[in-house]
Figure 1 (cartoon, rainbow, N blue to C red):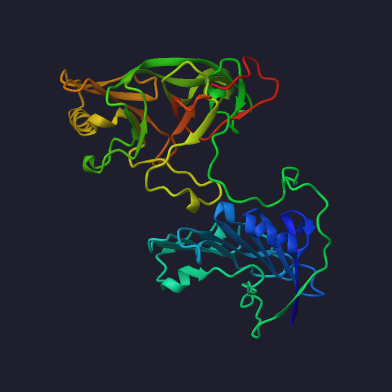
Figure 2: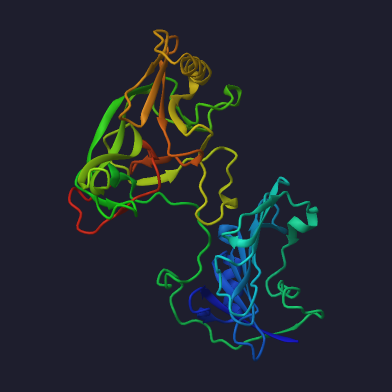
Length: 433
């Protein structure tokens, strides 16, 4: 079978067409420079492509989209180039198994299998036999090393990776489709938003706006909320210059989940709040209330020019899939800010105070019930503090680090629950902070 190969700057996921086609020579140049490009494999007479390969070496990434004859995506394969430049990790794969021609692409009832692999041998296979509505079956895939990794082919020597999915037995012969060299500028910033882009971990959103009174936001459930003045709760002493953001319920010998270097000092703890109205079915009336959206350790009044997700030393950004989060873990819906230098005595005081359930003059107090901040512990020997706060559930919660134009840490924020969106026509200052 003959397979036609065409190259482009990008692949439009919505139209299923290459965006800004280029010649093989230009694609080779982009490959050598690490720039993103797409390779489309077509069978003459078949409307939908067999597969589309998405390459961006600068992002350590190669992706694969496989389509059936009806144009439905059947496989997504995410491969990563790590420390060994000669091979690729089969990082993440999703397979959809449509039960009939009438089933729409990505139908919630479509059975699917997800395989999540890591370079250290860990992995998870999740089988959803009736799609998202039918539960899942999770196992650890017993894969050999050669099943986790594949050799990295040279440019122009890639096989048709989806040959087995299409039932092809004999290797196809490849024919390059004719395409004139691109006369467009090198930059791809004008690509439509529907074009594929390399996967990116979760982004912060307008965090600074949650602490700016007058800004109008929505959490998706309440159509309009207005940010009010942040509520100051107290201060946190970090004499060691190493801030911990963690769940306080972990084994103290393991240390905190996240640590962030800061200037030694005492810093403001506050929480962002919004005011909104809703219809209360119990009072049968419109009620106005105030609710928290985030907790913050404020280190400086300087505005945050950028926000970044705090990472552990073991977190490898090259392995993140789209919108993946990293952060601290909790099994008790509780997080904390603390001085990492006094982590063991502070968490010991916290655990003792929590079990006793009463104030301890040696270093524990319960706070009021109307704040996300719950307990305060302090270590007299070091002059360090720990302050716990409530999260909306167990699991992993990101900590967002705000930096000034000079790169200094000015704030650390943990969201109470998802990131609200700003509404148009907001009031207040437009600068971030």
